[in-house]
Amino acid sequence: MKKFFGLILALIAVLLMMPFVMASSTPTIVMSSSSGHDVGDTVTLTISFDYGDKKIKSMAMDSFTYDKNVLKLKSLNWEISGLLTSANPDGDSMIAFASASKVSGVVMKAEVEVVGRSDDLTQEITFNAIITPETGSNMNVAVTSGVITIKPEEVPGDIDGDDQVTDSDAIYLMYYTFFPDDYPINQNCDFDGDGEVTDSDAIYLMYYTFFPDDYPLPE
Image (cartoon, rainbow, N blue to C red; front, side):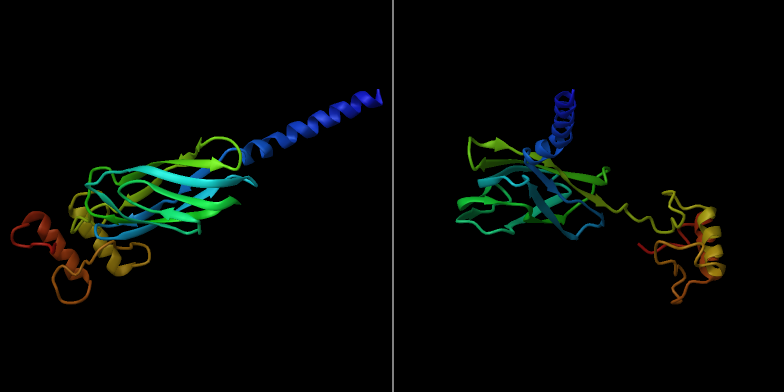
């Protein structure tokens, strides 16, 4: 009976350890994400690798895919040292080590420029990755894509953020002049150009909703 319970306990211990063994035996790469960017911004994303305690001989990445009307991959730079390295944002990138090495953490940085806009404010960057393990043949790596989130295009006068300029924006701005902490504004609201935001700007904005040609808003 004691042997039976001993076998049961050993089996439970093996089952409990399985997730950790499985996690360390699967190579993964994660590209970071970043939000709140506008046209003209350059964003640095990191690419991190994990393979537990296992060693690799080399690593390669290719097929970086994204909307070229919105983003431009300006550069790729290895953050680790190798015997042979190459980083090409328009083609293949690889690194090879003099001997099998344990690699973990940030292995590469990508410089991405926001060059345009689209209806989709969430822009994904996908790519492929392959490693050569210490023993065995090449392996595909599970890749988590990077995401760059673009700020919505600002609409002058749309203070309450509903994508249109109405009397509610003028009322919101009037409240701001009394309670700025409770009614934060998301743009320059000095519509009358006197260098400060007051009730006169709220009145100006209200006039704009009736006579937009006579009360233009700054671009």
